[in-house]
Length: 558
Image (tube, one colour):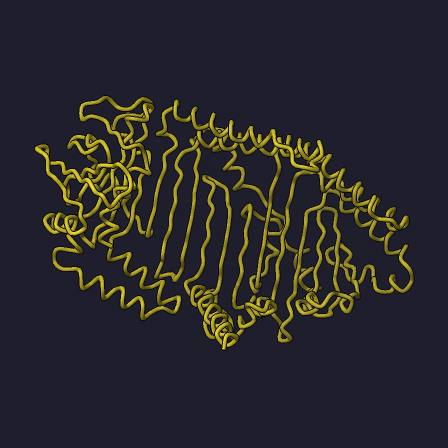
């Protein structure tokens, strides 16, 4: 830990070039005097970090190692802190980017409890500091394989550290800790990057470099790539390039948050991006938060797994996709040698064509259960452009089947809100893996004008009915969540995770009660937010699986 503290100043090199503004220099071009730094990083106090590490280690089944680590740290901590470092106040970093890149600044803040103890610690690690007449210390170290000089000074109960150019540590240039650390910040680690503080020249250079890099990718043509596929790739790269350029030009604040929330027993990683008000970027982010999905209400609360995706392609990308779809359909038809089946497939693809080429993808999937027989119920739904045409083709295809196959289809088996539900008695003909998952139950299919819904498993019909009755509502652009307690039987189908049910029962009990969940979401609104979260017991579950795998490996070795 002491060595880590002595190397914290390397962050200054990574965050921005090491040269600094003089104390009486004018503000950097494109940056207003008194404006917030371009980059701010906040790390919780050492005591909090130790508690978080202990919590995570205990959750993962390594409580003894956590206690040993805590004991070692306490043995090195006194009223002078840990090697002079205050364990009860946060660490930080701030950086400013200038139009003249050599005038950019970056400074690391380390909380200090005892200056003499801190200096002694540096000498212990062969980092002997030399104090200048201006109160700034210089450190040259053979331990770091870079020709870098570090500078630091004590102020405001912190040591301020920078590299290469000590003018960043002039007293007039130092920021007070209160201006660096966000009020009420509780995350274990947080960082903020202000696009609005980037000088216009730097933005132009960044956009130019990105466009050059993407242009090289556009010109590449893979073996076997058709002209239509190449055109689609070009449009996709152009779309990405435009989005990135808009973020650099019109982006507001980009935030990162990593948190060990011990009270909620949850681990969270989050990235959020906002746009400057009144810009097209801000308008697009807001519109993302207002989109609705037909299937947000169809995701089950008792599910082992839920997935939701709603994506609308830009017009140029949608047009480029159309000929690629045509090529794929044509190839599939050419590969079908049976004339009758080829004719049926042609009709089916033509009925799906408006949906495939609409560029509006709205999909929902839910895997529910398991039942007492260890089987799952699945329901899947996809948005259609002309469901009536698809329904007609399906009916024609069924009528054209041989009698022995036609008997397996029960058209109009049920009716839900005027929508016909068809039953396919093909459960016994599913492959072994599918039968293990959903059993030999019928498959149900319903096609309404704007959606296709399919379900199977012990409660397949109920799941289809529920999906058909669900009302559209606002939802995330993407959502994936898995309940490990419920998904354990599914995991057990793989040899490496065969012990998942037993591990889940030991860790989560019989139901999980929500403490077994991993969730990934992408949402729009005032800002675009990407979040991954998991309950702390998830660590224990995977530790149990790992222990089982290692035990089997040792048994095999014996």
